[in-house]
Amino acid sequence: MTEPAVRQAIERTMAAIAADATKAKAKNVPATARITDGLKCEITGPNSERLETDMPPAMGGAASGPNPAWLLRSALASCTATVIAMRAATLGIKLEALEVTVESESDARGILGMDASISAGLGAIRTRVKIRGAASPESLRALVAWAEAHSPVGCTLKDTPTCLLDVEIA
Image 1 (tube, one colour):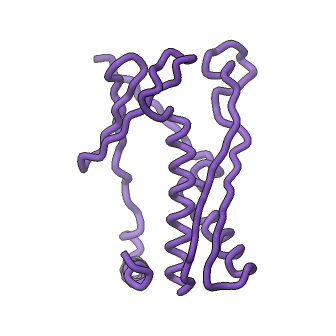
Image 2 (spheres, rainbow, N blue to C red):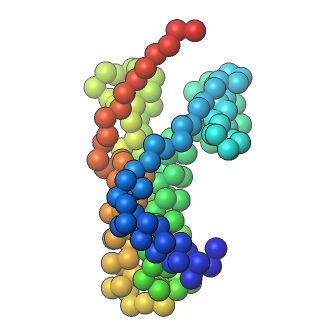
């Protein structure tokens, strides 16, 4: 989709939501993961989307796909890049280059349950944005800051939503 087409799509969506705020709310489509072999998971969505994950050999996997935490970082990177591009199109800023990299740290003792005081969660998540476009450096920084504050994946990580767990014994 070209920049004007993105801007037009966003403007149509915003007009529809302004006319009827109930159109803004949606239940997101689920992702379902199934173990297929060892620690390899196949993740599927409702429209034939398909991803595979695996763990590295040190954790008992075969490294046949990215590990789940990499998918989290990739989701944050791609979501941030997408929101930057959407906002740039809305503002009429032509981007010449955009690259978003997300890094994190972890401590394997958490996932292995070796120390109850160490979380299995990722820590020190850092997002790096390289951007070039037809705008001043200040405008590009403001664009990135706006996008970071409106990235659904980034906001989810920062806002820590309630996580519920249902277990069904088959």
